[in-house]
Amino acid sequence: MTTIADRLANAHLRIAQAAQISSRDSEEIKLLAVSKTKPISQILAAYHAGQRLFGENYVQEGELKIIELRPSCPDIEWHFIGPLQSNKTKIIAEHFDWMHTLSREKIAKRLNDQRPEALMPLKVCIQVNISAEQSKSGIPPQELMSLARVINALPRIELRGLMAIPTATDDIAIQRREFAQMKVLFDQLRNVYPSVDTLSMGMSNDLEIAIDAGTTMVRIGTAIFGSRN
Ligand SMILES: *Cc1c(COP(=O)(O)O)cnc(C)c1O
Image 1 (tube, rainbow, N blue to C red):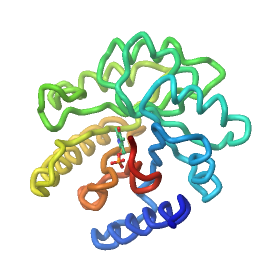
Image 2: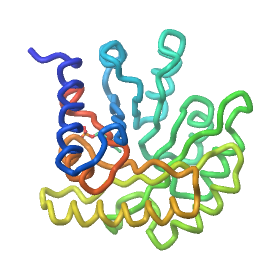
Image 3: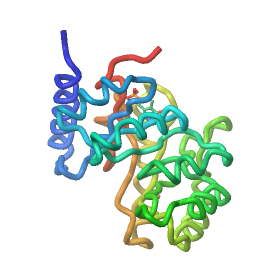
Image 4: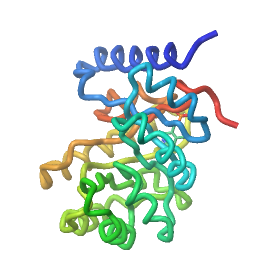
C-alpha cells in the first residue's frame, strides 16, 4: 500500500524530472497540496512528511480545518482555490493566507476591508478565464490589467500573480496553448508589478505541461490524497 508520504515524494519527483526536462530550476516550482474533501488525518500525514502549503476549495470546510490545525501546525500556509460568493469573503479574509480565484473588483474591495489588521495582507492571484468557455469563472484576459490596477491600490491585499484552470481536455496542443497564453499574461503583469511572482497552474494530470510552460505553483490533489468521491 502506498502512503501519503510516498505519493508526496512521487509528486516531488515528477516536478523535479519535469523541471530538468524543461531546463528549469525545480526550486522555482512550489507544490500546493489540494486537500479538499479530505480529512484532517490526511492533512497531518502530509504535514509530517514535510508539506506546508495546502489548498482548499470550500469556504466552510476550509475554515473548520484551519481553526482545528492552526494551534498544532502554525506554519501551514492556507490557500483558497475555490469559487467565492461575495457573502463569504469575511471567512477568507480572516482565516486564509492566500486566495487564488479573485476575478471581481467588488470581491477585492471586500477582502481588503475585511482583512484583520493583526494579519499580513492577504496574498491574491487573479483567476484568468483562459479557456473562454462561458461557464468558467475568471476574468477575460483583456480585463486583467484594469483589475490588477484596482488590487494594487488596496493596502490589505497583495497582488502576487495569476491562476488558471484550463479547458478540461486530453488534447496536449490545447493545454500547451492555454498555458503559454497564461505565461505571456504573467510576464506582462510582472513587468508592471514587482510583487508578482506566482503563476498558479497545473494539476495532477497536466503538471509536466504546466512546468514546461513556466508555472511557479502546481496544485496537486488526486496524486497525493487519492481520488475524491
Ligand atoms: C481540485 C482542484 C485541484 C486539484 O486537482 P487534482 O486533479 O486532484 O490534482 C487543483 N486546482 C483546483 C482549482 C481544484 O479545484
